[in-house]
Length: 635
Image 1 (cartoon, rainbow, N blue to C red):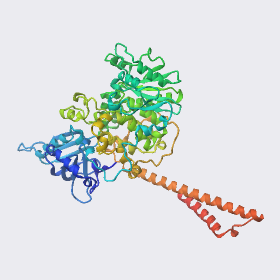
Image 2 (cartoon, helix red, strand yellow):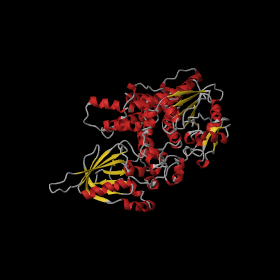
Image 3 (cartoon, helix red, strand yellow):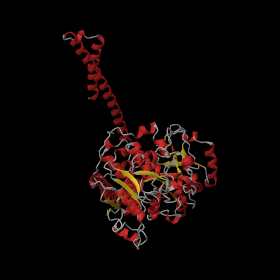
Image 4 (tube, one colour):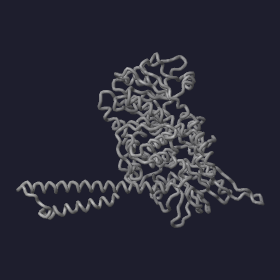
């Protein structure tokens, strides 16, 4: 990840200055009224893993910059979008009753906590208000991705590499599935993309009828097809209501998906109590009378779809940031926050569904209430467990694009705030107006659902480190960019909003950046050995681990661990080089042996080495010397 814009990193990084195009500077003029003080001298920064830094604080339209302007001194570039909460702490008044400055505590979405000590109370107030203004923009076109222009031209357009036509090319070549434009103009479902893959022999009228029977129009849609032929589908809850309504179009669609199978499975990710409650409000569950061939299974994951997941994340970070807590209390609070319980429950559900697809094999339909949170987490993890392609760099990108970005996970609502922000204000509601939802629903919409998925991925990576082409560096990079980024991939709640913003033309895709050779080198795992089998993780409590490299990275310095990984990478590269050399030497040896046999066969005479040609003798000696060298190097 390009660290210059949000890191406490090396000085003299001129990348942003090079990107200062005419468009960008013209855009900066729109922020003039929001910036009450553009520069403050003698500001002291206190940041994790660094000593105090005194320098000049500058505020631009998208970044907070602090530089000492001394050679070989680090500087801070912090994107405003990264700031989750700002706390102002004024110093106690002097004997004359006059307050002399104070501190700003910046709690960031990347989980850092920064302190800025400012000597003047006036400057303190102006900096605070300026940052409040800039972190709560109500116009998404003023966000940094619309101003950022990469220096180097991308090798490929990340917005086009995972289109349905290419991703489902093999599936579309069969006689079972087709691409449909039934949602053109987003008339059937506001949160689905315009191009969808649907059963080939189900017409668009039937699809539209099914959508009308599902909450938010999210009708059963293709997610994955296992090698056994079993299909994984996802959708939202049916609108059964107290009157037990039905939809023949929805029934026809699901019955067609059954194919030759006598039974299918519907995994409802809600408790029976929540299903009953939502049925009274117009929702509900598929009726046994109208879906007799579908067996219903409840796997309650209610907590993922409400504030309890955010509360768990908040408590987790409170524990991780408490450096003075005793060991016993730390373990007790870690357990009581419930975060690892969410991971265990999620992985358990994903494994159960994966077993159904692999063993029975029957089609599986997954849904919760809206089909935007727990449904996406589970369907994504199922594919990682049973599909080895999803464990590659390209595969995980395609999975996230398909099952999260295109599937309509509301990133703008879910990531408008993170774990540090817990109290609603008018500013937070104004900031959340990015989405089309009403402002009084903004704060309840905040949830670290995508982080839960990434943490579950981390658990799989910990248990099967050699089965993944990438390291946790990629997962951490995805976490950061999903909350704040110079790229447009995670902006907006759905494709419709991104179209309205002309985002695909006005911004750069994160995938374009991640697929550059320099970045790929930093995320490729040196331990990777392709594994074409299914990986069945242990979901026992003792098998789950805290993601220290993410949650504790600003508390514990992991530099040594990173250096060890770099050394491992170099050893692996050297090992590949030696293996390649050994293969070439073996081939030379085979050729020399063949030469000896040919000479012997001419007159049935045994030829000693002295009678071989000079090149042959040199070749054998070279092989002997190289074999000895390889033996020494491996030791």
